[in-house]
Amino acid sequence: MTAGGRAGPKLRIRSQKVLWRGWSTFTRYVFDLRRRDGSSDTLTREVLDYGNAVCVLPVDPVRGTVILVRQFRLPAHLNGRDGVLMEACAGLIEDGEAPEAAAVREAEEELGYRLHDLVRVADAFVSPGAITERMIYFTARYSAGDRMSAGGGDAHEGEDIELVELTLDDAFAGIAEGMIADAKTIILLQSVKLAALAGAG
Image (cartoon, helix red, strand yellow):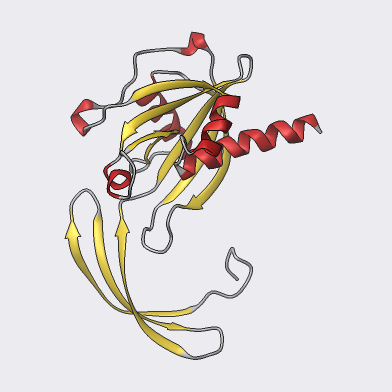
């Protein structure tokens, strides 16, 4: 059985061809897939692989604030926005690195904060129709005294990251108003809201 609760598909990969390899790998697969009714199709799909990632939302429960980052994203620009998105801190997991360690490292690099009490919220595929990436989602606790540096990311990797501290109320309003339009950030903010509701109940 699969994690989805039923038997997985019968799959046979006929061929795979790397179309491009750089920061990521883009591969064309030709495969046979047996459907639930017993029939079979030969399908072709292009798949992008650049590893797995983490994201983390720091929350100050005393002041009721969170820290996000603001940065330019070319794909968002190409799909109808100005390209500047407000997001949770995120980054790729390095080879052999535990997800928790990756989340702490990314927070120190991008945010300049030391985080505490990481809570693993979810482990989910980001866009399973075309990308192999799994994102592991965390929340964590921070306070003003945990500031270590200015943050801002790695300029050598082209990062130009601005820190944004918001109240939780403003962040939730930002989702409704379209100011926050990044899926991982919405998932993490909603998880904080659900945890608060569960605690209140």
